[in-house]
Length: 455
Image (tube, rainbow, N blue to C red; front, side):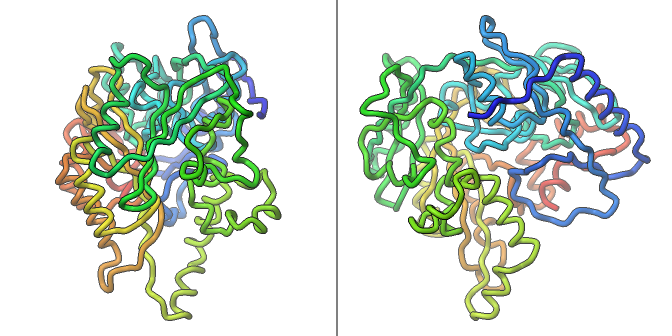
């Protein structure tokens, strides 16, 4: 486990002052993007020539962890890999840790995040106590749930950096045990939604700490139930070497991982997507250095392919159909999950599929991603490509958007968006967004949400 960078409050203040100075010095009308080492977005559109890159390398550390109050003060561009390393040293972890190591705390708050604690703790922004935001006008404001900038605090989630950038966040933490005991339960399709509802009952005695699921085929799905424990079992498993975590779901009924390895169980093989690069072939896996078996490496390979068009040229040369990337996460009300999966298996046909139950942590509504408080949803994640429909290169993604809408669900915006503008704002509360944009970006310094996610 790496040692995260620790940043003193004075060093943080100097870094913020430097960033704000550079931002304010940009000529009016200049496009801006954050200069981060990696990205977990799946929008690969070209960058405008006049885009200025703001280097954020000085805003990637943990300012402090308070083990008594169970809080952490963190710079906005800190990766969860570094944040988790800093908190585990105190026997603590964030309430929700998104699956991939290089997701940043600020990115998860402005772009949403999810994991197997989300049925208990909601989404990452729900554990934020306060945050300092660099607004598009170049001002620093401190947003809290009930302060002067409460509207920005509530509207920041799902704004994807179009209302400003989080430079410092104070978040709640939870205690951890050394190990996590996993039980992989095979569940019939007919019982899937009911079993999820039962496992996610917050009033039940002995409720689990973690719940997620994997659909391998239309008739084969498992729910994985995790519980903190001091018992390592027969010895904690290691899925950073030759063994592959998602395959173990079919092979083992019970498993044990260290808390650290459980948190990052999906990163080593990018869930199951490393198979596209041959990394799950035993020979290739032995030759592929362990330090490069991680999600950000695979994502860079995908980005390289998108830039060069290599895969497209191969399809043309071999006269095989071009492929439509279908990389999405959607939230479906649990009672409509069976309908979604049936249509998805018929019309899209991607497997495996990830399931992650979630509900809002409290009664607070978040205007740009209007889930209903108290309602249990299931995140369905699928990341692959399918043959294009001739003359309809976006047919599968549009089908998913239509299906999600018809079932009262929501679609995450980290990937391709095919809604028309009017339809988009109907789904993502256009009036609330425009009110925030007028208050915090009256000169249009940053792009609006629709133009950013659909471009």
